[in-house]
Each structure stands twice: as C-alpha cells, then as structure tokens.
Amino acid sequence: MFRRRRREQQEQAVEEAAAQPVRESGPWDADEPHPDTDRIDLGGLRLPHNPDFDVRLASIGDQHVGVVVLYEESSLQVQALAAPRSTGLWDEVRAKITSQAKTLHEQEGPFGPELFGEIVTEGGPRPARYIGVDGPRWLLLAIVTGRGAVDDTVAAAFVDFLKDVVVVRGEEPMAREEAIPLRRPNDPQAPAEDATAFNPFRRGPEISELR
Image: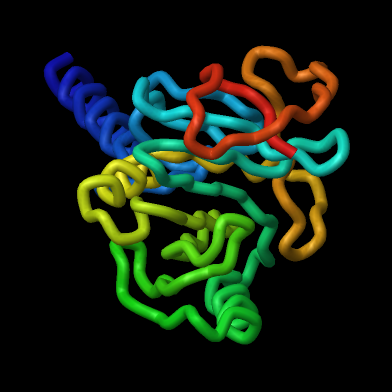
C-alpha cells in the first residue's frame, strides 16, 4: 500500500511539473504550459489585463488582424502571423523592414534582436521599436512608437505586457505571414463595426475597433 501511495505521489509530482511553464516568461503558445491568469480572449490572441492600457482591435475590411495598445503617449501594435513549422520568420521579416526603412538599425532587446530608429507618420517622425518573437508556427510582431520607444519606464510596461501574451495559432492551414485572425471578446460572431476617427492619445473603451 505504501509503495502504491508513493508511486501515486510520484506520478502526481510528474504531472504537476509538466504543467509548469518551462520558461520564465512568454509570449506563450496556447499549447505549452503557461500561467493560468485572467486574460482578454480575442481568439488568436489572449492578452493580459492592464487597467492603464486602452486596447483596440485593428481591422482590414471585416477581419480583425491586430491590436493597438495606447498608453502614456505611446502605441504598441501587436499582430500574430502564421509561420512555417520548420523555421522562424523574425530574421526574414526584420530584413524586409530594414530594406524599406533605412532609418532603423538593429539592437539587442529583451526578446533578442530588434529594430530601433525613427519612422515617418502623419504627425511627422516618431521614434519606433520593432520587436519580433518566433513561436511554434507563428511570429508575434510588435511595434512601439512614441514615448514608449525611448522611455524605459513606459517600455517596461509594454515588455511586461508582451511577456504574458498567449498566441492561439490553431490547426487551420494558413499562408506564410498571414495574420492570425482575431475576434471581439466573448462575441465570436460579432460583425465589424463602422470605423470612427482615431486619436492615438484619446482614451476609449477597453476594447474598441480601429481600421
């Protein structure tokens, strides 16, 4: 009886160890062990809650393809892209970005190589950071513009946010670099809403829509 109990305890310990994250932080794949915390479920992405962030869905036509997070005169654009099973995409995408934006240069960041410099927007040049994280069959691409690209305190809040993102790739066949589709939380059948004027520094609802 004692041997059986010891064996059951060992099996339980193995199961508990298997359920623990093998890395200290994400971004996480939905199929790997990760902290079970309350997140905003957008289908292809599950986002951590931060009451200071204004989170908006970005859409092309009727499809939600990314997220824009507004905080402290900064924006964080997040998009999950389908990637090949064998290799990651970030090296390739990073090379494409630098070939088109000569003002960006490579530097080492919390997730590995990233790009930093200035980009031209409607409001003029703005500092920007391009962050990429390769996962199993996906690439999480994040672009920080504004104060968060140069202010360590604001940047740290964005980095913490990205470290707790969960990517839900799904099993559907997808083209290389195709955006993993998103949906509004708790309403998988909701149609896209009409676009409204977008002011990047104006507070809005927790989840609104940006086209």
